[in-house]
Length: 225
Image (cartoon, rainbow, N blue to C red; front, side, top):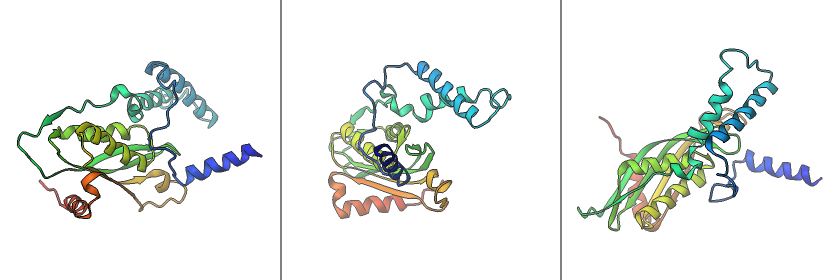
């Protein structure tokens, strides 16, 4: 039956953590509901899941869980789905004529695997070469955080970070490397607690091997205080 075949295909994509698009898949009516309306609906859905699992929601420890989870989904771990939360990345003239690579490394990253809704935890390393404008350092962290706070596959997340910074800075010379652990691999399925996933996206001058090597060497530098 076609339905059974579709389920097999969906399971194959999910179990192998395959992304299907560069943009986050969103419906055209994604923002028809307010955040509070979404929370109310998700709260009921979480309650139904917990009750189906046999949990006693009259227990003081569990009673507030559906509401807590719903608020967390909408306002925290999936807050990057809301374009109103997109960071305002103001740029400035590069008046001090800094023409070398700028690297923001070891950006803490928390995201969620879109196939099993389990955490992705790791670090992002981002770099760019100014063509006349610069961006505030904290904005690079905020851009990483914004795109991480949505159901993701790591390849797409890496691309989205680079694309956003290229648009903000008006240059192709942007790169990003992410090294992260996926709990859908570490805590279920194969249960390989040691493995991590590394993805990269190199634009403009970073496609040149010498520039790419310089970026990789900077990432390896030890930072101690």
